[in-house]
Length: 289
Image (cartoon, rainbow, N blue to C red):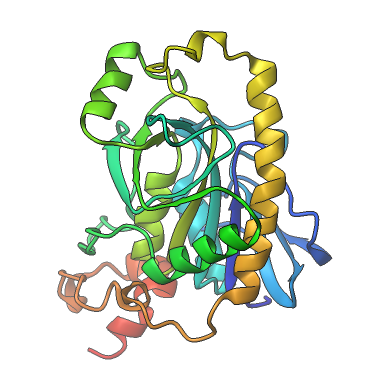
């Protein structure tokens, strides 16, 4: 199977990358089930990439239905070291306007019951997550966004809610009181799992509208949101393409060794099947014991 170092995850409105050439598809089955769909392999700005539509073909999957573990593990099976994710978000601040881009650096978890770890079943591990996004990858994306002429906000807190319903007014006001900046439904689990997989991860958060705290929120129509999604998807493709071209070959961040001191279970106590299933993640550490 071909090794691809750069993974792309498209969210609402971004279901393809038009600039990708030399296309082929690969369908994978992981120890955690099937991903949202096949991975599109191709060439973007001279580099091989793997693109996955987060919600599946035709946007069939709700955020709560996504098999996050399979999606990220599939990227690991392909050899991915960088994941650039795009997602639609609502704004919790007046300064973050529809069509703006936010590159967040923090999360608040408001999801319920989503599985967000590869570990368990006899193997315990605890990775650091104080800084949930790769600082180097985020910097590359920020530079690409500025070059593309987008209004980019570097840094910010992303509230990841369960959905599929949007916030109540009381919740929206609460998140604002916490100092949060944007709200969405998907990226937290991806970031946690990417860290466990030692994959650099960042998010291009595409603001479609203000959350319901805003006095003009009730005047927002579905047509307006869809128009913003389409506009944002074009911008996201430009930013992703520029970032892919500017990615460093060698990784010097902490993401690449996130599991080095995270495995707690004694190697001899780890079930054989778990070792086999998680070999792409932990194999290099268990072989040195």
